[in-house]
Image 1: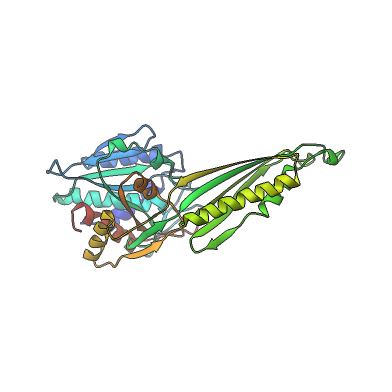
Image 2: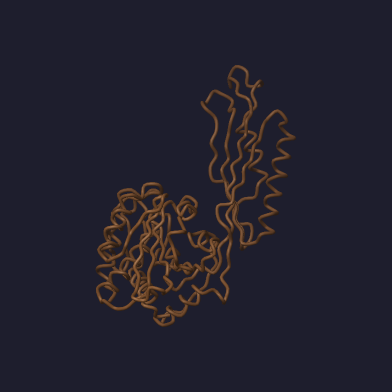
Length: 364
């Protein structure tokens, strides 16, 4: 039986373990101990992702993969969770870490409940990944040869567990390096060619914000210059764009190319190098998707109506689907992700654990 108090305790213990992207070792060790105590065999792949397995009595049964990521965003060190009524919050100086430790805690509670009750369950595989927040890096480096599952349930969505991510965009990052010419800003600025000025001209020619219902564009950071009194020689622009429409992505690539050509003509002595890289690919769920059918059946069995919503973000589910798995992303009771105002609704977290339990017991 799902135990609310134990679930809240597990969650608050997990968020107190610092695990910013790239520093997941402490939480990985904690989860290894918990999983081994439940009878799972636990391994780490070459990238440090945690993979656990537990078979049922039917050795030939196909396992189900449960997945969440171990890392959190900044400011996420020294999290001090507090329970306020039916919510869990941080002290306001950090994120809470519900993304994605809600998903981790719900999975662990469902496994604990099944172990405690001693009832039959499906063969289970668990993948807790690293560095999801910096571009699904852990999942993209996951050793899929260590997994047998063909279906994955990813506990990494915002809102209640009934909220299912119906579609996710393709994400393309870009880096543009501008090289001008340095000079003393007070003595002979006319001999310089400001990379910052050139970068500014380029940025004004790029789209910004929400472009349509399926598409966004953002310049995230600008790095350049050395000191106040030197004309900047180099500047780097880092940005991204996302869309669920492939034609729109192609149009944006053309806009970037045209903007670069315009600025190169304006500043022929400057050098502009651009690099575009796809971080993850779009998907849209369909009626024949096996994992989706499994989840919707289990939700309705719990009296919850599935709520399909498109997302502008990506999850490990994008990678799993690209690797040929049927993967579906569900909510995990987290709200206000990536902010110091983040909070978790405890009854929704309990529902998340109930869904996970129903899935591993084959109640779909």
